Structures are given as C-alpha cells and as structure tokens.
Length: 460
Image (cartoon, rainbow, N blue to C red; front, top):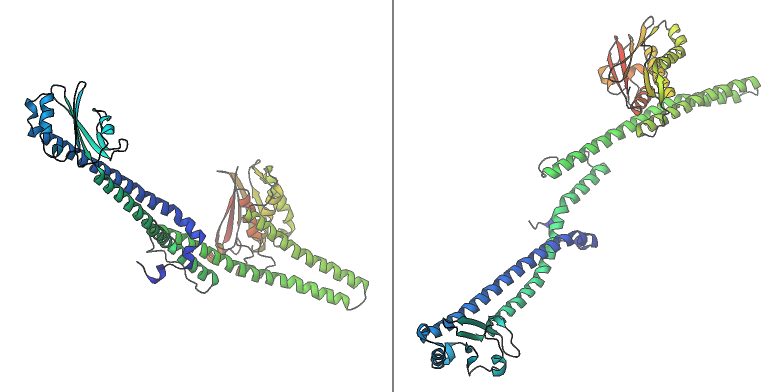
C-alpha cells in the first residue's frame, strides 16, 4: 500500500492539496469528535448510574439492618444513630417527618453542617454541588408512614475519574487530528494518483513519444470509461492532424500550378516592352489570381459552415426554380459533352433555404455529374416531398469506388479519378457543409462505370 510512488513528496504539502484534503479531514475529525462525545456521555451516564446505585444500596442496607419495615420515624432515627460509621459508608443521613428533622453526619468528613442542613430534604441527584460542600451523590426514600429518609455520600473520586478521562480524551483528539490530517492527505494523494498517471500518460502521447493509447480495461469502471473517452479524443485528434497534413499537401499541390503560371506569365510579359503583351499578361495574371481567391473563398465558406458561423439568409424558396437556374448555367457544358439533362419535379417544391447557397449546391453537384459523365450520357434531377424535401442527382458516368465514397466529402480530398480533371477538391465538402448548415443531409450511392446518385434531404 505504501509503495515508493505513494510516499509523500513536496507536492503533497501545497496549498492546493491542502484545500482538497480539508473537507475530508473535517469529515473524519468531525466523525471522531462525535464518536468521542457519544462515548463520554455514555461513560458519564454509566458512572452516575453506578454512583447512584451504590448510594441507594448503602441506604437500603442501613434501613434493612434496623428493620425499617416495623419502625416509625422516631425509631428509625434511633436505629440509624446506633449504626457504626454513620450508615456504613454514607456521608450523611437525614430523617424528616413533618417539621421534625434529624441529621447524622460522618465526623471523618469535613462538611459544613449549616450548608448541609439547608439542603432540601426532597432533593436527590448525582454529582451535586451544594455551596462549598464537596460533590455529593444524594438519594431519598419515603417510608410508609410518610417519613422521608435522605442519604448521601461524597462522590469526588468518580467525578475526578470522569474529568481525567475527559482530559485524556482531549489529548487523544489533538493527536488524532495530526494523524487524521496525514491520513486525509494520503487518501487525497491516492484518489488523484490515477489522474496524475493519466496526465503523464496523455502528455507522453501528446508529445508523440508513444503512439499508443491509454489502457481501457482493469482501471475500474469509472476510469475505464474515462480512458475510452480520452482515447477517442486522441484518435480524432490524430485523424484531424493527418487530414490537415493531407489537406496542406493538396493545397500546396493545387496552389503550385496557378502560382507557377502566374509567375511565368508575369516573367513573359516583362521580357519585352510591348503594351499588348503586357496587357495580355496582366489579364492572365488576374485570371490566375481570381482562381486562387475563389479557392480560398470556398475554403473559408466551408470552415464557416462546419463551425456553425455561416450566415444564411433563409426564405421560402421554390427549389424547382433554383434547380432550373443551375441547369441553365451548365447548358453549354452539357451540349459540348452531348449529355442530356432533365429535371423532374412537381410545380411547387418549396423549402426555407438560402437561395444563393442552394444554387451553388446544385451547381456543384451538376458540375460533378457533367465532369465525370460519359459523352452521350445523361444527368437526371428528381425532386419530391417525403419527410422533407428531397432532391436526387442521377448520372451514368464513371462512378465512385467504395473506398472513395467515404472520403469524397472531406475538405480538399481528390480521388484518383479527379486528378485528371481541373478542380480544387472543395466542391463536395462545400455542398455537405451548406446542406448540413440548413439542417439537412446528403448521401451518395455509386458503382464504378455505372453511375452515381447524390440525394439531398432538406427540412420542409
């Protein structure tokens, strides 16, 4: 239990650790105080009971020895006077009948007679303090003829015993407070030692010195669950870092070409002082710069959508009109590739959306369908209402492999089939981000060389 790693160190005596240990210490010390008080009250009651019983037994023995059952008050007084040692251990005996009283006092005990005489004949109790008299235990008994016999004895010994026990108990509580404080610090150390080990382990994992994960079994149910959550976070972070590295590689690859062309065109324009050549070079540079700016703008839009900060100007829109606008934009592209485009949707296909953003979504999906479609093929767009508004893009193009289907919506991801086509790898990630920003979803079904189906579901 007290292994080397569990021994106290400098960090166990800091203010922060003391604040953690204080509630536990107060609980333990409070429990100890309550238990001690219960024991002291029980001991007090026990000692007082013994003291009272002994005094009553002494009085009963004295009355029995003189045959009190057959006596009257005066004969009881005479009989008590004949007892040796004033009642065999009693300090005083008082016999009272009406206004007549007789008080017998043990001469070996220094008692104030007047103060004792002033004591009420009906009073009884344990450890009574009467004036300057020593502590007394007093009992009373009433005879059949109305005579009242009161007896008492000095109870200093039992009271001193109780006080000594209380004093020793107080010392024990003081020493126990030191032990309980040490125990509280140790228990706090034991309770947070798994967290400290977890912190060290996570620091090692974060530093990259260990590519593994935290053990998820054998730590207790609470820590097993905690370690599972931490491992999940570590895996997501590693995946994010990997995706960021891949994204940066893709960005570098896609930016290298327009920037290289831009530099080449600028150098070409500066070779000769020909105004027409300079004008053409500046025009080409502007086109390349706009392409880079467009990519960065789309990347920012995707980031805004994924973080939930994209501003949407929603209104009631007929999606059939926005789909028709997208078809018009790509009409000439479809004619060049001899791909037939067709829209099948009811007259009213209404949803609350940002119309500009949704036209961009339709344009991206249509651009993909045409870009990877076969000459002489088709693109069919279907829209209908079923648990919201659904729009489906169907083509008979080259399709998407099962491996790529799980990644096509990642930012800057470009599959093998798209490397031969001009693009930035941002279209589908932007589509997914905008659709989800509207509270919708997008799914894909595809088979190589047999076509692809993208389905968008929007709230009605």
